[in-house]
Image 1: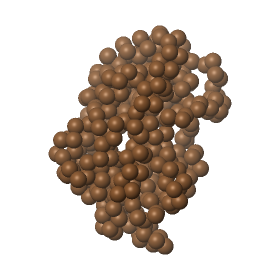
Image 2: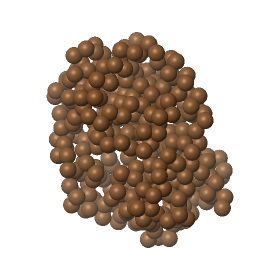
Image 3: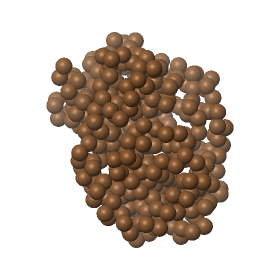
Length: 354
C-alpha cells in the first residue's frame, strides 16, 4: 500500500517519520508533502526524508488563511493526481487542505489530533476522515461537537510523543552547531502561535509574550536562550531586544538533544513543552487556557507545568532554574512513565489490519 503524509506544523515530521518507518518495515511505500512554514521543511531535510513542498501559511488574517488554503488545495490535488498510483491512505495531523484533497480523490484519511480547542481546523477535517486517532485523556464529546461519529473515534492510552521519544538517545553535535559547549547554561524557548485562528483576537502578531518572560529570567539567569520563533516578525522583535543573549537557529536542528541538555524549556504553545518534559527536562507552557493533553502529562508526573498567566510563568521559570540539580532523578522517573504509555503507531497499525 501507499501512504501519503502531509505535514503543516513542526511537530509532524518527527511523528510521521516514526509512523513511516513502521510502515516501510511492513513493505509499504510512503510519500511526504508539507507547506512552506516555520521549521517544517527543514525538519524533513534534517531527517533525510524526501518531501514535496506545496503551498504556504496564510498569515494572521482569516482572508489570508482562506486564500492560501485554496491555493494549497489546488497544488496538492494536482500533485497527488499525477502520481503513478493513487495513495491507499492519507495520514495527517488535521491538515485541512490535504484532507479535502484526499476526500475529493477518494482516499481514506486517518486523522491524528490532540487539539479540540482548534475548533475551525477540527470542523474542516474530522467530518471528512475515516478515523480520528487521539489520546484517550480527551473527552470524546469534544470530538463529537466538532462533527465526529462514534465509528470514527479511535482513542489510545498515551501521547503522540511516545512514537518518537521512547528510544531516544541524545547527541551533543547540536551544541557544536549552535556554538555551545556541554557545560554552558541555556534554556529553550518558543513564542505563542500568534497567527493561529484560535489566537487572532489577541493581536500579538508583531510581538510575543515570551519577551516579558525572558526579560525577567535574564535578570537572575546568566545563561542564554535558544529561541525558535514561529514568524519572521517574532524573530526580528526578539533579536532586536535581546541581541546576543539569544540564539535563533536559521534552520531545523536536533531539538530533542537540545532539550535534553537544557536547563528549562518554555513555550506559549504545547509541542516543545511536551517533548522536552517527556525527556525529563522541566518545561512550562504559558498557553492561556487548560489543554487536555498538557493537563494529563502534568498529572501523571512528567515535569510539565501549565501556567496560564505571564506572571505565574515567570515565577515558575525562576523556581525551576534554581532546581536543575534534581534533573537526573526527574529524568529517570519520566523515562519509566514513558514506557508505560501507548504510542499512536500501535493504534494506526491496528486500524490497517481491519
